[in-house]
Length: 379
Image 1 (cartoon, rainbow, N blue to C red):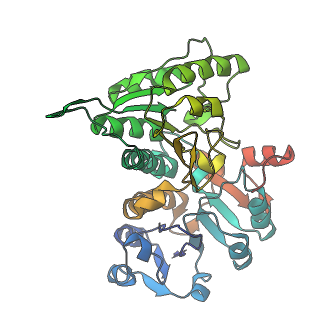
Image 2 (cartoon, helix red, strand yellow):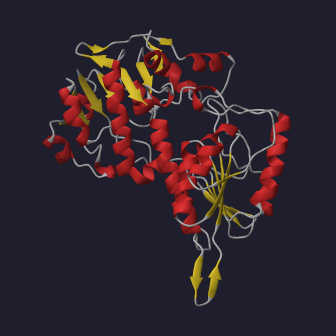
């Protein structure tokens, strides 16, 4: 079987879907790799690096001869137009919000596998790009905050007196949130975190943060390890708790996302007004509208003296390791989906059926079909 690794075309995207180190394992599995010239340059991998390990550097026209196309970000509509009918695509798809793309893929009879909708099961952990990329986002968010506030992170004993540590508040204790907590703690900050899932309290404490709990009988644990949307009563209690603590915070990192929906607003303008001048919010939900109502996607803005960072693609800022992690996830995914004859298309397998978005002109992904029938989001 032959796969083709496309160069990313979206401005600012520096990752590559497969790195040279993966080639030896892919080759052993019977997979040949074509790489578009320059695909790895921005991540630190040259064409020569790929050629040394057996990949063929190919032009864009040659790429479409492969059995499957592999890339990081969802293809543009123009890129889909340039794919032959019936081709297989593996990438992030964002099918629950990119209905325009899903319709185009179905119209072209593209067999599209969305790596961002792989079921989050124990078996699929090695394929979970969301966890991989969230790890990077949580880490980088803290570094950006530390570089932006007008304070030290750690407590310091100096000749000029004692310097109090920075206070960091993390909203959401998933992979990104826990990494943010751990990184801020390593830098010496006092860290607090909250989550709608009370069962993550021990995880928060294990990385050195204090868990801020909303007193409620309601649990926010949803399917697949995600949080679910909470009741209005819970949201009111949550807003009061956030208001109490956010005014003391130097850095706030919100991370809350609900699959297929706009990010919930956790930080209101009134919350921002209560924060100290020079404080920083790094909104990890910026791509889905932001957890702060003043966030502007892919912009850094100052509102009421608070810097709000809305970078929607932090993993790309660490393109070498982001590509390394993404590539390893792709490897495991390909090994699961294929055998010596090619793609197995085993619809009884939950990873295959759960991540296949379109097949033979039909929309397969259940949640996407449901949202499209309801007239939900569209790109």
